[in-house]
Amino acid sequence: MLKNVTEYYYPGSLAEASELHDRESRSFFISGGTALALSDSTRPVELIDISRLGLNKLKLDRASGNLKIGATTKIQRIVESEAARSVLGGFLSESLEEIGSYPVRNAGTLGGSLVRPFPWSDVIPILSVLETEVTYFHEGDKKTREFSKLYESDFRSTLNRSIITELSISLPEKGNAAAKFIKFSRSEFDVAALNLACRLTVEDGNISEARLSIGARPMTGERIEKVENDLVGEKLTGNLAKEAAIFAADVTDLGGNDKLSKEYREQLVKKMTEEAIVDIKREVANES
Amino acid sequence: MKVEFELNGEEKSFDVEPGEVLLDLLRDNGCKSVKRGCETGDCGACMVLVNGRAMTSCTLFAAQVNGREIRTVEGLEDELAERLKESLLEAGAVQCGFCIPGVLISAYSLLSRKENPTEEEIEAALDGNLCRCTGYIKQIEAIKETSNKIGGSRDGR
Ligand SMILES: Cc1cc2nc3c(=O)[nH]c(=O)nc-3n(C[C@H](O)[C@H](O)[C@H](O)COP(=O)(O)OP(=O)(O)OC[C@H]3O[C@@H](n4cnc5c(N)ncnc54)[C@H](O)[C@@H]3O)c2cc1C
Ligand code: FES
Ligand code: FES
Image: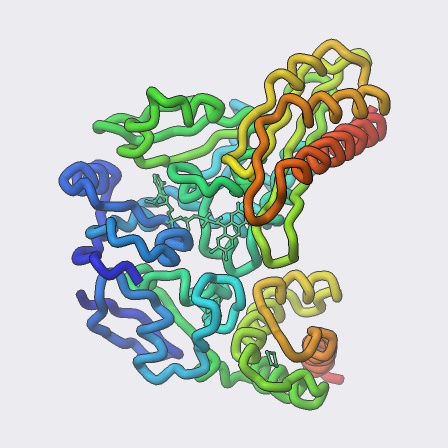
């Protein structure tokens, strides 16, 4: 229950939603409501329901080769869709299925996971390792930004005043690509104590593109570019997986909290990075 | 504010607070099968069907379901629901019973979209239901049993 909320709006268009939001600094958009309904914050005074604006389309755009996901599409619908299953041998659907439980995914949306992400969010590492673009509505216009630039500090205030309308995920064109998501939590019901996603593209036996993103560090997910740069140009071997894992544990900014100590996280980063790379190696070998 | 939706097959209109969650509205209006458990979306005791999809009513604002169809266990009276209730009782899947309305909703929603779910699919469908008494085995058996019975009656067996 949000005690201080006095108005709940059902705008008929993005422009109307945006105008309502600009009018009251303590207004919040509602998509699936799962994050806001649980909050006992006294800040929200107005809620603006954007779940009826038709932002729930999901399609594979054959012309661009991109998977387009409307921001208010329920996560479970993405998990169940054929189109999403075509992303990297099921990587997207299988990893999104790790989020919460069936009823949570039936209500929650990707758009709702992005603007004020939980530090343990699985969505951030998953989308970070894909070629993801985010379309948002701001000051009357739709604009697009790379997912990796969404959280840059100079964009923060724009993001806070925008409506995310769509995510576009491009499917890798060349080479053999595979990705893996690993989540470590203390129980089936708990959120991640550490989560990690990795994608590698291999061309002529060498890694041509690498993405590694680690979340719940306990800070929000972030790409580990030093490891990514180190992997590019290398042969994908078991030994490389071991070396990359040690390097990842060394360079990732980690901390401790009530779920895990910093030292435990370091060991997990090592273990999970190696496991992800070895799994990807196996998958890439099966594909070629 | 006014919110209108179909509750267990009847058109209803309610006065709600704009920040009120659906769980409170339903319980205040007689749907006591909707249990107040964790209130954090974790236990599934407050589960309802929203347009046929299982969702936790503690993580939804009442205003979000304006114009939708809500079903609670009070409104589950068809053959599938009756068979499920029977199977849960026969299997000994009910101990204290607190989780059972939520389990029923999850199971009903699963069997409505899938006639013959695998054990893995049943487990996945119950992943949002916390039962502190039974260990789930009897509940899974009961859901399997219902699927066999319903399948049998559909085949004319
Ligand atoms: C029990 C439970 C378990 C969970 N487990 C996990 C888990 O394991 N892994 C995980 O990653 N997440 C987990 N979550 C988080 C869940 O994924 C998010 O709550 C959900 O995705 C948020 O989406 P929503 O549409 O419900 O957001 P809402 O509650 O509607 O909104 C969340 C925030 O985003 C803003 N917002 C919403 N949509 C937009 C938009 N399109 N543009 C701009 N701003 C917007 C809102 O104003 C609000 O501030 C869990 C949540 C619950 C309740
Ligand atoms: S009371 Fe809603 S999930 Fe527990
Ligand atoms: S029977 Fe007691 S909680 Fe499930």
